[in-house]
Image (tube, rainbow, N blue to C red; front, side, top):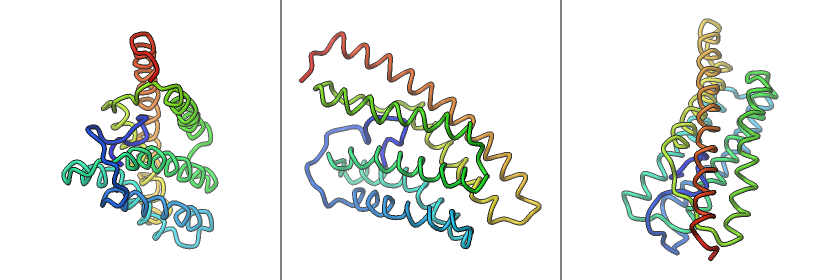
Length: 203
């Protein structure tokens, strides 16, 4: 994913109409891995494998965007897959971690509420013909912190007892920081939306 969950769109730049591109295939595989991860983590039978999948899912958020830009394969489909894959990953990982008692419900709710608002607001604006907003760096950083924090949370289930406390504390700090920046990015998008609505007529 090029943009990460912090933004309404994906990689910046002109978009191709192609479907079968390398970054789109990476995004597709990433989406396919999400339910497998959820099953592994919720059953508690393969925590180490769940951690490996969490790393793959989180790191591919950067990989497919990098590939898209380097290969000139930013596509319209990719711009749709980006936020869908990011939000699915964040929602599923957080719910599974709350289910396992690793992430506090309140912290997860703060993050998921922001995603719910974005998932409702941006499609409505685009349906009315307003242009897709560009990605901002705060949203990218927030997404990176969230995925890293969730990675440490999953790791706490797979590491030795001596490292569990460190992993859990690191996870909480990163998720809290990511949540704050997530909402800061949302506030920035809100300001940008108001500006666009005042200066741009719907398409």
